[in-house]
Image (cartoon, rainbow, N blue to C red; front, side):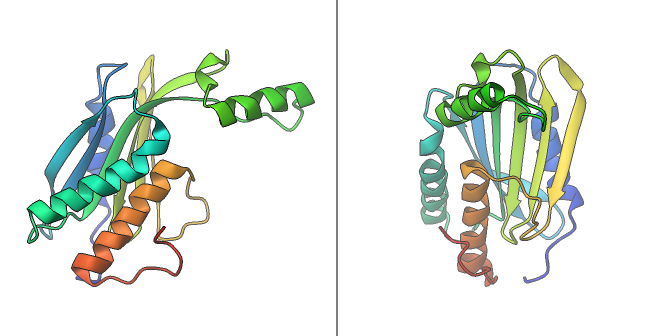
Length: 190
């Protein structure tokens, strides 16, 4: 299988993960999915305690996929979803003071956005497939009726960054190369 399947079923899975999230301050989750040519089906779901440091997520996700591949060698996963809660802050505007910029940068480095008065609590789902495509869906606490969704094609210049997204896309590419004979763009398996 070399052609990427239609985007709709993948977008629906990311959207549903956020729509179904109705208990705030809850566990995060990592879900792997198989693709039968027409629909996605969940293979495994693992809950993640939010007390686990975010730096540990990439290795934990890779280890989970390796365990799954070893336990079910004839059933490779095709897509990978990480649903988390987080606090977000819009970056300083062009007219921000040096103090505002410093406050933002300090909070970003120390992961303390939740302490800033302008912080928003969000639930977001990231879904990557073996082709390197990425879907996101999210909503803000207190504004659950306003769901935001995005799609990013392979190597999209506007793709959001961050270790979670890099880990999911890297896992997808590795799985695609190992189990589906798909090419990996140079330097993307980290």
